[in-house]
Every structure is written in C-alpha cells, then in structure tokens.
Length: 96
Image (cartoon, rainbow, N blue to C red):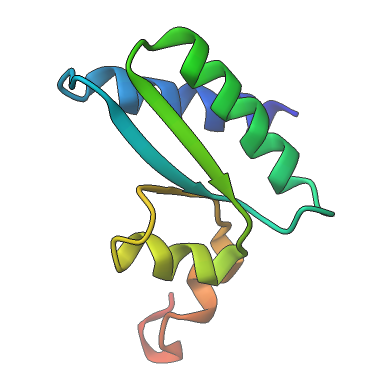
C-alpha cells in the first residue's frame, strides 16, 4: 500500500510540474484488468483528474515490459512497471 501511495505522489508531482495546457490527454498503461495494477491505475486516474483541471487520463491494460515499450515508443505518456521487468532487458554483462 505504501508503494502505491509513493507512486501516486510521484505521478501527481510530475504532472504538477508540467506546464499548463488547455486540455491534456494522457494515456496510462497499467496491467491486465484482472490484476492489481489496473484498479490502481484507475485510482490514480481519478486522483489526477480531480486535482488538475484540463487533464484527462485514459487507463489502458498492459504489462510490465510492454508498458516500458509503449512509453518508449510514444504510445503512452505514463506506464506502470517494476524493477524485474527493467532488469530482464538489461544485458547480464552490465549488471552489478
């Protein structure tokens, strides 16, 4: 629960630091609808839209590594992932 709170606080801080726009539409990739990331993403969406005028967030299903790729390719502006997904993509020779 504490990790979710930190994630939400970090997301809200990042959005608050962004320059104001007339209408900002963000795509947020989370996890599968049956998992815990999807409803967590819905809660973050609700908090962001309540706190910031002119921002709408569309929550889409995804997964750890797929979310990293979606954000990298510009298909989503926000994404949930975990350190295991990041580590799997790092060559073994560069791990410490």
